[in-house]
Length: 160
Picture (cartoon, rainbow, N blue to C red):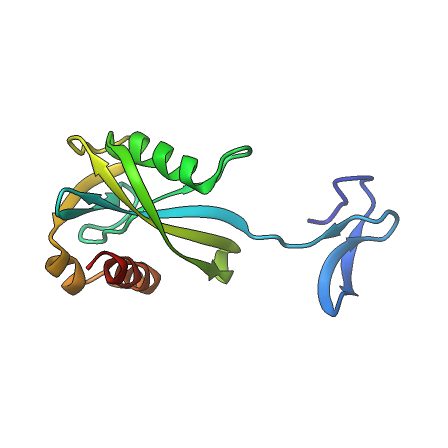
């Protein structure tokens, strides 16, 4: 950001609170770099777990349902909305798994495992679904998605 969103003056890097931050040279605006909250949901359907492949991803790469927390939503409302939009499933309960920092894209991932009911269907962003038992999920190759593996392991340890 070259110009201040408050007064349109030029911004520059300055040390504020012990860190280099983008700040305005004229007003008090500081770009604090707050992370964007995102919900990740491991969907449980009966005794199985549902993973999805985004249309933009290569074949074989599956993960959980994720979505940005919108203004005024709680993370639980976000997960219910995202699961409905992406899988056409109803969330009947959820358990918090943990929160994870994703510094490369400046996100705070808030992870849940959600118990759902219905018949899963691919939403507009998804190419395909995969339904796995707990044992299959434990052994599933998430490829480069190491954080997805970490969240799945944490979720399974709460459920098993």
